[in-house]
Length: 114
Ligand code: FES
Image (tube, rainbow, N blue to C red; front, side):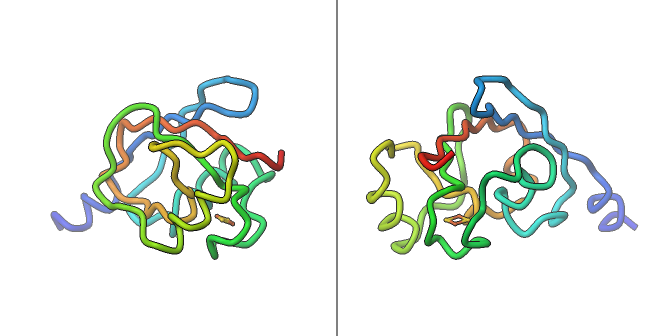
């Protein structure tokens, strides 16, 4: 029962779009495989060309508020370094798992291809 309630709990993340507008996206734990899929579903279909393989860079985001628990792996780090506008706070949203740890974080879309 406790596990069932936990799965129904709703969390929020802010995503600043390409126009500079802040958008609130809501999710339940494990509702999406990754942040890119949530953004495509709720905000912008213009990202995610490689479907989460860390190849295209279209899902590039910057973490502007909060801290992420999980860190980049070498594949993600390599792709990010190829993007001219990457920074220390850059991530590929397709490599960020969707769980309650994202609650309250703010990301900014940074794709260089859109
Ligand atoms: S969807 Fe292509 S790198 Fe994330």
